[in-house]
Length: 109
Image (cartoon, rainbow, N blue to C red; front, side, top):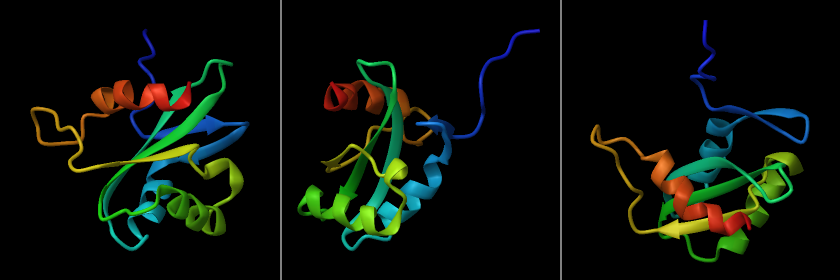
């Protein structure tokens, strides 16, 4: 028997179980944000860091992080938010999380 990992988007951050979809929903509730994706990327120290990407008229990403800080616990606030015109899509028309992760990996380092 081989364990292939989780099928959902739940990760463990600093000892807390976090549903990435909950953070994405909070991002989508921000004015101007059309779509959002949150990824858990391993940092240089081995700890998981949350990084967000969103589309729409995002404006100042620091303002988005401040709004998320007021709405979410500190361990659920992404380290960075990157604004994109379009998120990369896979062949099925869904967000390509692997391609996006490769693009955002530099934001953690």
